[in-house]
Amino acid sequence: MSFSEAEVERYARHLVLREVGGPGQQKLKAARVLVVGAGGLGAPAALYLAAAGVGTIGLVDPDTVSLSNLQRQVLYATADVGRPKVEAATEHLRALNPNTTVETHPVWLNAANAEAVVSGYDLVLDGTDDFATRFAVSDACLVQDKPLVSGALGRWTGQVGVFHGQPCYRCLVPDVPPDAETCSLVGVIGALAGVIGSMMALEAVKLLTGAGQPLSGRLLIYDALAGETRTVRIGRDPQCPSCGA
Image (cartoon, rainbow, N blue to C red; front, side):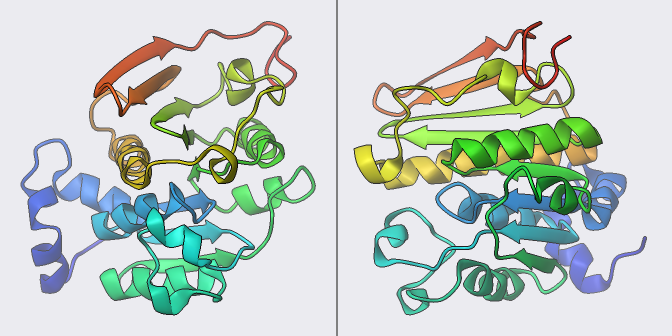
């Protein structure tokens, strides 16, 4: 897979990076990455994936842009309010990198359709705040042996982890937490979405290029108020409803 002169200049900082180089950039160009949720986490993640030269990005989101989104969803502008998110996102991502193909899925992912959508991609990023969707995406990735980069945030705290086989996401969250919170209910500091979404994109680039050590089986937790991070191991749950015996 060759690069045009414009692509060589665009990706120059990757091409001279030992862990990426030409072979890694070719892998990015050939990759198909699905971003589930084009919101606070999916927005910055999609921007950095497109900027990195990922060949095809799939966007899953049935929602429209609202004014309250703009405090953290940096993929959109004020003029986009009322537009379908996948439509506005496609326009902005293509403006950033016309070499990236954007495929849109304006639907809610659930147990009935997740496998069909996930099957068309090499890697999945999930930044939704709906546990039914999270479980459906995790199960689909497990069945199809697709790596999953999962991110979450609320208030001043965010987390990101990578799941591929065992342990799976349901080993970490087997059921909907009884005290589950959403950003609309408890709030979230806007810049935190950029931090965690960028981390998700970074883990995706590492997985696709084979650079470094991804957060496989680990969860990175960032406390923005304290300015501290910690990483914890995720143990395989023998009683996991998805990957357990």
